[in-house]
Image 1 (cartoon, one colour):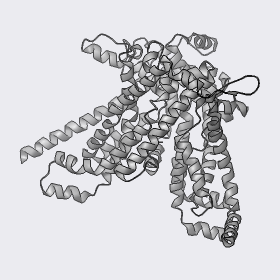
Image 2: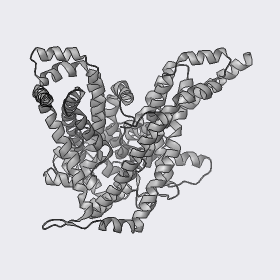
Image 3: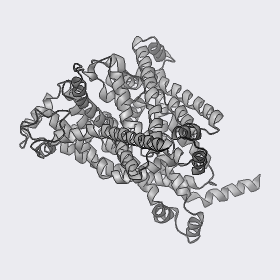
Image 4: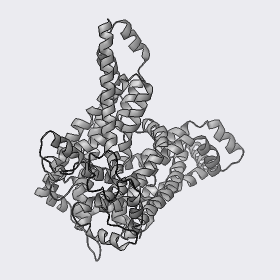
Length: 302
Length: 297
């Protein structure tokens, strides 16, 4: 026991400069991450401008859960997230398959370089691009549908279309980028498998479904599970930059609600409570998907 | 047999066309903004979503837009925040990654857990805001520069690069009596150039595209980065509250009667250009970095 203590002391002394080097990083994490976590306690308090805040238990949560606005916001979050997973999840997989079939290396590289680009643009820029793209009547989309005799649609202010605008702009931004993981997984498949299949006379389709798909299935499952883990983030930056008064009831999500109620209207406790509620659900989703991932693929999310 | 081969060739051509169209769909919306921003003022009224070649090509829109104080200040602010932020990010992240790569460090696992927790749980927007307020950082560049100064995902990615540095190299430097700081900056970082490049690009893109924290932490318009100005123009313009800025335009000396569409397009392009300049590096390092690290950024 004493020997161990002695050894530890020596080790600590030996590494003293490493600890010193780590100190700024540690300080940073405590200040920028852990103080705000502690600060989230105002969800359980009434904020007083003079004197100390008063603990009020779950008062703000009760207000939140009985609020029809929050209910709508919650349902919007789920709806938008679900719509996004429905399209943004499978499309990159299909794209990876298609890219894999291209025989010209250069052609594939050029296509890839172009389709990754939107991922690096901010949502402010993308919102600007899409607003102009979807403008009625002179945006390109309205010009195209006008060519087929459809009357111009004001997509950005149409409650019927706005969620699809979110979904498709997300696809535009992420389809190329999200395909990278699958492309890498496909590249890792042993070529001998394909050679053997070709000798046996398997067609390209058969090879895709009997070799490629099963080989990259673990990647597909991991990505899907991760998507579920981040389900409550319906895409703050996107919604925040693309929404307008005409469609707000259809697109307002928890994160935009937190901003509007909390910082916009100064209802700090209620906003923090909403954020915390979302955080707890998110945490639960991530931990359970991690468990699920370990069960299904044998590997955790981390 | 011949028939089958011919069918395969047709299929392949169809595939190439489909992918080509996809690339066009990804590229055209950006190109369209470029066209509108370059169109001469006398033709701008006819320029729309289907204009492929700009008429009366001119850089007038750009020079006018860049002469708006808010805009050129925004551009300088963005460059400043990105540059300083990048240095702070890279230095801090390297220090963290270097220490945590030493597996037998007492308390290392505890530190790792501390960092991983921040990846899955955060205090949230309002506590973040109050922290800035309590630190008296509101309306200071530092609030934006320091925000997420060490991104835990990028830290872990950098650790994977540092892991590859031969331990013997580090140990022998230690025996020679080099300080840890010196080992980090003159051995580990120089041999991990691609790792540093990767996280620099991650952080660089993050800072360049950041608008939200700047919008809520900074109150002085002259401190806003470009993205916030762009947001003001793009989003507010649709709601006709842009009138204030128009007056601004007419007040500035070089401004001609500019078309909104063109101003907006020029600003969008200005915001994209730095990304395009670094794009070859982005493709080289960022894409690989994605595979190195966590699945989500």
